[in-house]
Length: 183
Length: 113
Image 1 (cartoon, each protein chain N blue to C red):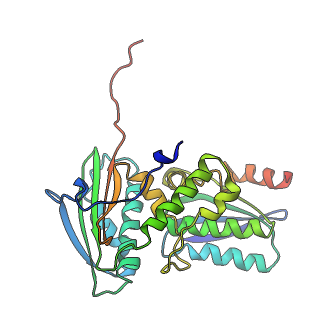
Image 2: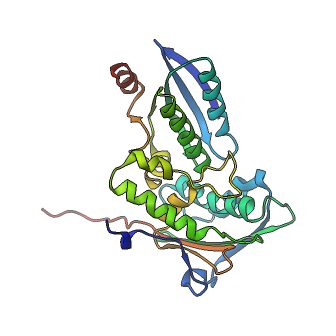
Image 3: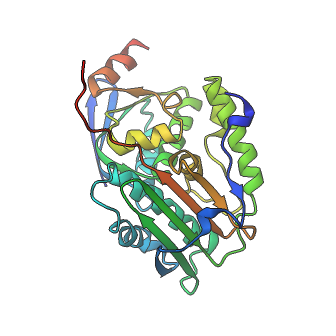
């Protein structure tokens, strides 16, 4: 895989992923203890046909956690705003916090590029240096790996606003093919 | 999340039961650190009864794995399945973690080392 094929987190206010037309909306206080509960309130709108709902829940939970913890520093007075829409083909979310934004985004992209270069070379010894991204606000409960998985899971993109306190993501689910195979 | 410890020779098997999420993944990390203090050197983490893991859970496994590697101790992680396997795949850690299919396979692997 060449460097140019390595996915990156983008910054683009004009991305179509930020279009909230027809989306559901919820807002929550930044209560760390309730992150998974807030996530369930969102994911319950997903159609039951979606396979791997656990995985969707986990990926949504990571975005909410980032907003609550890293964006709003778990300040209960600060809100997390979420727009979301799910159908059997796509899932799209926009999560906004009131924090200063993900200022280390460029550093993260560079870090991720090095991580993936090690991975594609199957160089797990050096990859050990790139399995966890640590920022100024990271603590022991932060895995430092959520966005690595997010960039893979949200296969239509992970896009931040210019202020970097608002992220939009979209996933297209694999098409389930029905029919009779004729030999 | 519940953690149970059993033994097979000198190998300690930790059966994890429940969700490894942002609220409780630290428990596994703390348990293994305590076991290390008691000079235990061979570990199997059995994830058969774990159906949910998030980045904190993956982070705990990374921490445990790197600490054990640095101390030249032995670790296998086994029975990963469903969304747990998917999250590890998305994070591209399948080749980084020492993974076995079953507890039996993990025991054989450690004994052969």
